[in-house]
Amino acid sequence: MTVSPTQRGHGAPRPDNMTHVQLTWIEKRVEHWIRFGRIAKDEIVDRRRRIVSFRPGAIFAFVRWAANDFGTVSSRIDVVRAVSAGEPFTTLPFVLPGGDILLTIEGWPKVSQVLSHIDAVDYAGVDPCDTAPDHWRHVHNRIAAGHQPRAYTMERHRAWLKRREIEG
Image (cartoon, rainbow, N blue to C red; front, side):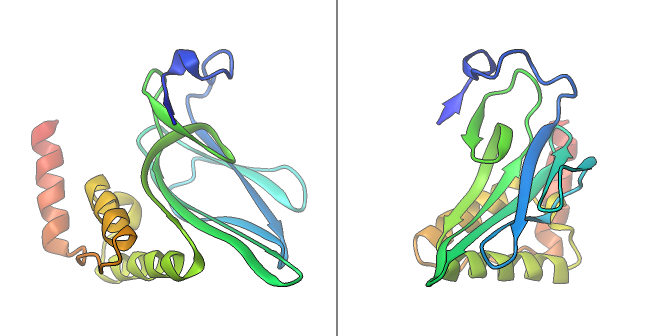
């Protein structure tokens, strides 16, 4: 659900204008972690929880996994662009206020496929948080349709950097 900042329901704008993500780690039960992204602030809440914050425009991957006595009950990965004050955004659990969701995949086989794709981007010599946002949308659409996403090459990355430079 995309909402405008005035519809957000969280009161006043965030004083630090950052996007905050609550991470939880309860061994073999609930594991939330950041796969990539430039963390601007990291606050330890207690021994199982912390809050990481991202500046507007930062792109990060947020992984959520949960299990019970019988095995995995939920696994999900979201690639999100942190929004500036006044920008519309989509709400997302554990992310305040929300963000521009570039990719959202559920189910361990598909999540694993996304994690492998992130590794391939790393291997190509590109930091995944610097990858073109449109590429993450492409990865989402291809995996959701049951197809293999195109590789993100250094050539594609250079084209993205030039496009960003022109757009200004």
